Amino acid sequence: MTTDTAFSPHDLLAESRLGVLATIKADGRPQLSPVTPFYDRPGGLLYVSTTEGRAKTANLRRDPRAALEVTSADGRAWATAEGTVRLVGPGTDPRGPEVEALVEYYRRAAGEHPDWEEYRSVMVADRRVLVEMAVENVYGERIG
Image (cartoon, rainbow, N blue to C red; front, side):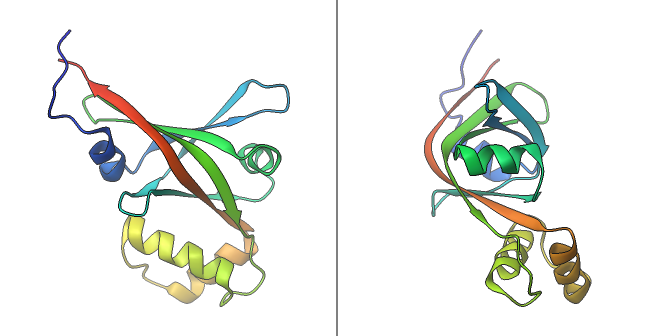
């Protein structure tokens, strides 16, 4: 097994749009959820959109510690970010700050939406919540 010294787990986190978010259940066991992350490397923040009432949201409201893992397309590299989460939302106003935060997340993670008014309405109707993780630790490796 060889490790590539040029590998950067921060770069892999920034490039990845599919990951697994780990939160802590009430009984202390991990709860894992596939998510679409966006890593703001300069800001040291990682963002995920979720829905109020989901296990991960309830877990994070009780215990804000979380970890997110991503892997490379070839499966030969992985990176994990750990940190403390702040939840934004759900919003009740399509033009309110909670929905604006979700709009900014979408723009950064996926680009422009074809219908922002529809997006805003869906964010309110679905009771979407923005997970904002202050990244405290990043690690990972490339094998091969």
